[in-house]
Length: 185
Image (cartoon, rainbow, N blue to C red; front, side):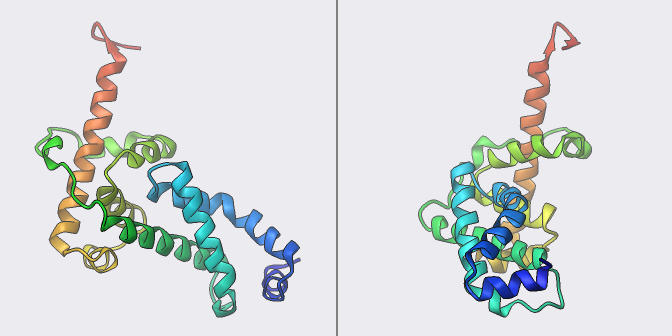
């Protein structure tokens, strides 16, 4: 069944078509959700809520674009809404834990595999993680991030900078642990 037929069958409420759509896109979307979540359970919740929105609003999809990109945008928006909902409970981060003046190569993040980087991103405080993902991965500018997260542009810029600093520090600490007696193991 091609994509247009799949969409039509989903709109008719065909369970098998919905399952096929979910099975096709859920692994890719789970990766997106993992970038925004603190852990796998939170990512699964975002994924589930996102697919509920996909099926609820599938009738608004215009076949002029790619379905995968449309679903991706819904997942990102769902993750952002999850962030906004939880932000009210805990927005403050312990800034003193971050060393802002690290002497590290800016290319240090580029040396990581995607999986290693995702694991490290998940360890960032939620506000940092959101800004880092939106700026570095999704390509949003700071004005767009500020609007999406309901923060100032300055806060977006500082949280991105602090996120990069924390990531560099994590990598440097990991590299120090790998060195024993001046030799890398």
